[in-house]
Amino acid sequence: MALESIEPQKLKLYNYWRSYCSQRVRIAFNLKGLDYEYKAVDLSKDEQFDPEYEKLNPVKYVPTLVDGEVVVADSFAIILYLEEKYPQHPLLPKDLKKKALNIQIASIVTSTIQPRQNLPVEIDFIEGRFDLDKKLLWAQHYLNKGFTALEKLIKDCAGKYATGDEIQMADVFLEPQIHAGITRFEIDMSKFPTLARLHEAYMKIPEFQAAVPEIQQDAPRGS
Image: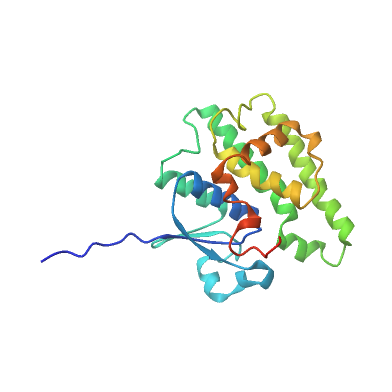
């Protein structure tokens, strides 16, 4: 009697085209050569508050990874999970000093810059208090502050990429934030020559190109 082959379950990524957190996970997927099912969660329509989605992600943010019975929310946690389970194209170096630097850069992006200009902050705090110009100034202030710190941190250690000549975790976290700074928040990147150079390098890499927000399947046409 022949045994039926059991097909491995496809990874599912619940994400939103414009989410920088989602973009960094898409980059990690691409670098590791992982096939996944793209599950769009439209934040503009409050789909993150759907009770079925809340069962997966009680915080009601994106992204969320479903790997069989394993559910992981938060982009940092997802990328660390992928790093452990799928070791191809490692994103963290073995060298302890360089590993710490990569994690530090990722942490600056996720804890110092990105939360200040994401959708919940805009809706819960900024909306109704500031006009459009002041909203932009708010985002620019924190982006410039974070970019200034990152520029100082990496200018003397950057190689072809942020922490050397290999694409690592720092690059995965940096590019979505730089992309947003340029395309959405009108940041003058001439003040950050290292970051600007890195952005140009990232945009030549297919795995980064494929994760760009504007070409995702749920992105509005002409975005």
